[in-house]
Amino acid sequence: MTLVARALLAAAAVLAMGQAPPPDPAPKPEPSAKRQCFFPRNVNGFSAVDDDVVNVRVGVRDIYQLELLGPCPDVDWTWKIGIISRGSTICTGLDATLLVPSTIGPRRCAVRTVRKLTPEEVAALPPKQKP
View 1 (cartoon, rainbow, N blue to C red):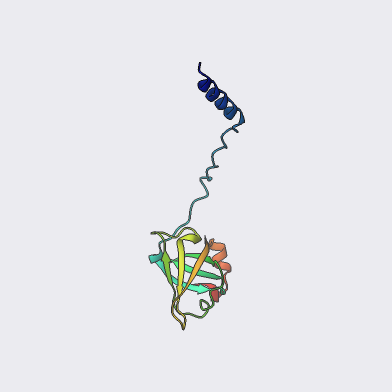
View 2: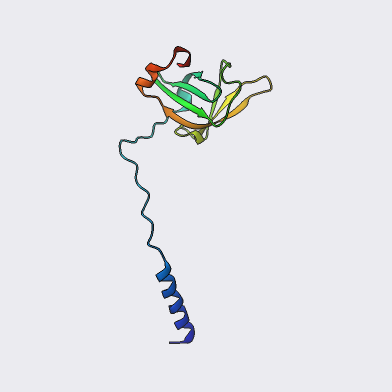
């Protein structure tokens, strides 16, 4: 065996000893933890809770709560909003941006989280927060 081959073998052995075992694969989501997504074209109403939270009605009975990345000053008094999606469906906050009319032009408000409200949560909403 040549000197170079021995050096390469020694280096490989040292590297193999210093390697940590591969990390465990990421845990798989539980089957009951189903993603709850909606198509932006199915939104037919909205109601602002405050400058940071907007409830949108999707279809007849579903209400999703959109928590905004920061305050969106005009969202609590406007009559209409637009939703820009980065794909065909909205499942997470990164998927959507609200377009809110203002006196200086449309304001873009990034969405942080999207959550479908349970029937109990919908029933507990004050009338002004129901879209």
